[in-house]
Length: 159
Image (cartoon, rainbow, N blue to C red):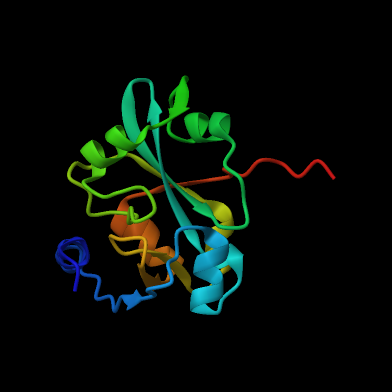
């Protein structure tokens, strides 16, 4: 088992969450890849995205079928200026690489917003520390263990 996954499992255990990660050597870097590997709807995939809100890193947990509205993220977390974090900020603030960032268990406690659309599912799937490892979780449990703020984070469909 990869060291990142072991570290993530320890973080889950300290939060009272027992998880059983699944490894997909073909990769789960994109929401579509993850959904195909797992055999679920793309909306059940949790994209763990790191942004910088008013100069501090934050996490947005977004449904794989949605695009994040950055202004909605800022509003949900009570900030103003938001920008996508670069790879260095992601690694420094979470200790995980882009594509493998889990929703919690980061090197520092980061404010977290979760896409309300994820709560419509009984089970969602998120990265477990590498781009090849994922885990299933009840979305309400995910809110609890992340201390996440639930919000409408998706770009509105203009069709």
